Picture (spheres, each protein chain N blue to C red):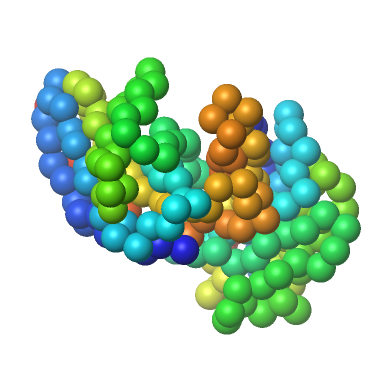
Length: 119
Length: 112
């Protein structure tokens, strides 16, 4: 299957600082990527849709000024958590959909996730 | 997007076959079904995907009845390493700009 990578895999930062998380599609191009957040013992929650060359689309309740998304190329999307606070501590996961020619469907592949801890 | 309903948890023993059923009563004609596996602190991993009838790959089988209002993921001869959360998702075909929405998933616990 397609490979999606994230960097860093974990990060610890002080309250009030900003943290950037990178999401890369390694063997395919993705005009659209998605960012999810997952709290302990909970399911994944969609935060935003990242569109190459245009503004991201945020889900209701997600602050666009706090979670800055940039999709500057077909293989890279970044999520910047600005002025991070302890309540932003979570597991952030990116993904992208890839067309599967064998089944004429598209499949969503996920990155390994980034664990953010804000002190 | 069609809402899915799965059992919250299931228990099994090593070597047994496990069947996890997902209900998606409002599935649309253009929707397909995908199952993912997630281990703690990892991103979801694609298991299998299908539109109708039966699909089989090297790790699982997916059974979809004619009305497509449910689907069953079948894991043959599970091992301890199959302990994970399994998600059933429904998404429209060929809409690369639309994200899949996750439900609560099924936590499978495999014991020796």
